[in-house]
Image (cartoon, rainbow, N blue to C red):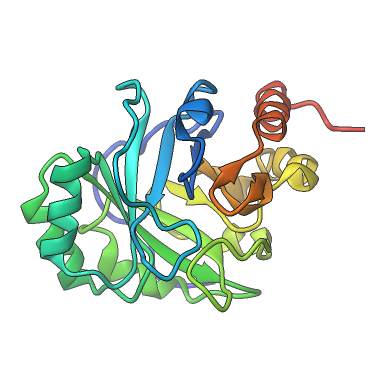
Length: 228
């Protein structure tokens, strides 16, 4: 286990039932919004099949819009924040702590989520320099592309999580993982799991979400009943 540990004298966020982020929004955003997720993610990385551009439909203020970026410039991120009234930034590339700090200083009130990719192991020392320059961590599955790979990583790795920074759990979460999610939420590893992040396994095609699958997932996780 890493020797790194969180030392800030502040009260950690009380976690409880995790919030829900539905990412990769593109084709049926308004319909997905009727499910009242806590967050909707819009990918502004052009190589993605779920790349979002154009007009964004009006959304309830209760749903926080998150912009997903990969190695983008500060200027372009600031432009997208203003254009779409984003309330959060998800950094999915090789952004440095200094980059995050610059964004933090220029986007007061906008939450910063820094993504880290995991397969079977992870060096948690990597997180230390990011503690003060982001609001959340997000753990995703290491794959060929940043996000949307459809595979889960070994969640037991998070048993060694040394921080009190709340995190989003992502990477290949679908209906097939519902029982696994419920079991994970009973473990110490989930103590700071602030939100679940779903994407490709709830799609009919890239960017088109399957509403019925999402409804079933939400209802089951909220009830914490194991699927037969």
